[in-house]
Amino acid sequence: MKLREIVETVKGTVLTKQGDLDLEISYCGASDLLSDVLSDMKPGSLLLTGMVSLQSVRTAEMVDLAAIVFVCAKIPRPESIELANELGIPLIASPYSMYEICGRLYQAGLRPPKK
Image (cartoon, rainbow, N blue to C red):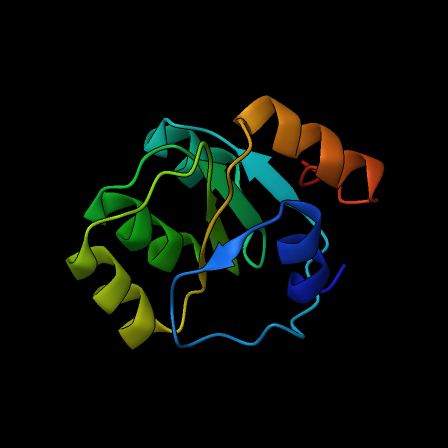
């Protein structure tokens, strides 16, 4: 699924200037525990989270995630957006809850990472 389609599916707003909206994303994970992201997520995956701290962007960098969708219309601080721009990690804000986004993306064909 292309990132552009994901943004449409979650009625998202792209918060960053950098990032390829034609990027193909095959896997998605949802967590507010960054330790789970480090241990369970696959490089190139999409992260759904409510954690808007700078650490969410740093964690995405360490795991080599494709993009982050922030749930419940949460917006990270400007320094997080700036860092994501520097790293080329698209940040997206969605008005939907994590539960709703998971359902929408699963129905659209996005799957969790295979272990």
